[in-house]
Length: 154
Image (cartoon, rainbow, N blue to C red; front, side, top):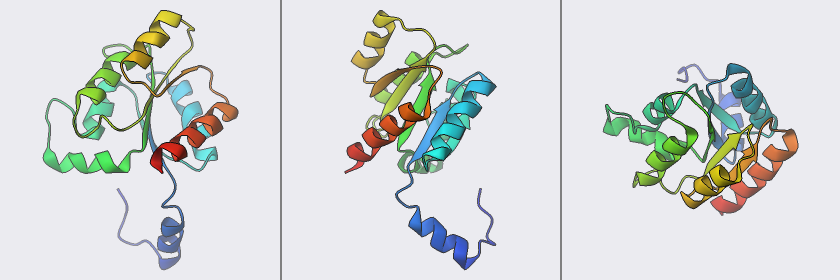
């Protein structure tokens, strides 16, 4: 939440970064989550993190306790990047829930995994994932991702 005491210079700065994509990064591993967040911020992305699929769905307004007011988050997120292997809800399950949502289905979802399993990769891409990336991610991966993101917004 932003405080109401933002100075006019910070408001001007905010207007200059309208082009800054907002990415929701989902990973149960705190180290991986922090790494992805740092790489995205280095590429001038605004980042929100979630430690699991349930929290991500809550942020997106798609949780079990849906509130129409939360659907405002939909327009704020330009991309979702999620780990594949997470307890409870996998990245694939999260992808399916996002693609089933009429308001969220257009948001690109990128799946990342430390395991290079072709059947898993194909399954995610067939379900609508924009990309599948192998961890650990590097700055060059994020640059490629951001390039892809900017192209999808035009």
